[in-house]
Image 1 (cartoon, one colour):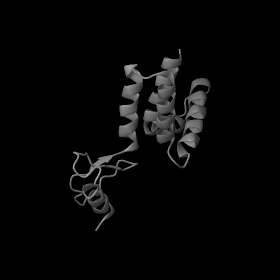
Image 2: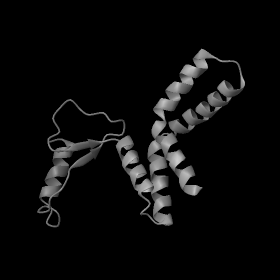
Image 3: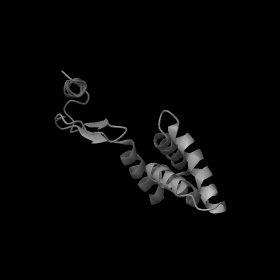
Length: 134
């Protein structure tokens, strides 16, 4: 019995929740969907959560505390558990400055584009925060 099967069993056998309708969702941080059948479970990646959260931030229905809490949660998801995105973002800023102030460097531009594309969810989130704060 796999992990998702154990979770499904625990839900169905729960006195409190077993009779309620539910969506079975599991986190796939990098968006990886296994080849084997996972039944009714729906994979959700960090980026899916971020984009849904950005929609909530844009709707304007959240109070300031809720908005700030959601923003921070989404920023944590966007940077990932290892902090790799922080290093990537530092390099992205460095490359953007280099490309803006020095002679064109094709390798630097290619690396800049790659980092920008990898971190587009975080960059969009930062843009939302800047727009909301202004």
